[in-house]
Image (tube, rainbow, N blue to C red; front, side, top):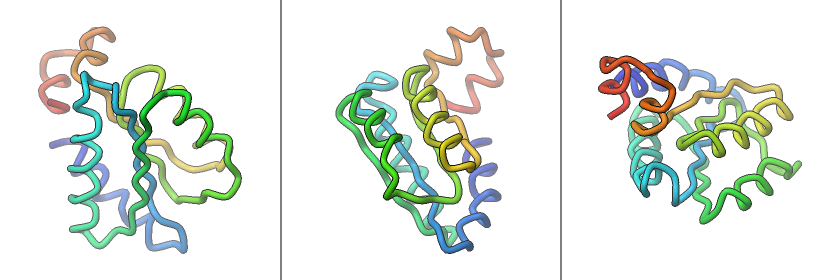
Length: 122
């Protein structure tokens, strides 16, 4: 719930000429990352945001995407674990855009986040 509210507020960034990008890999979060990315896409579209969704079958595919120069966006939302977040950070830094991190419950537990924080991303 917290993530959706924060992203919806950030959705105003999509009023620029560039959309918001959401990326996820199929293996992240035991396969739940894709569902989370789809839910975020639908929620942000409901707020009137223009969305580009990138779903990758492998982390290597996501890494290749980060190095492409023909893709532009105003905000990057990266759904997944530490490998996906590292790749997302590269894409955001290369384009000088904000990165919104959406981690899985298992990643939150590994980082020793509080139960309240983990519940907010469930």
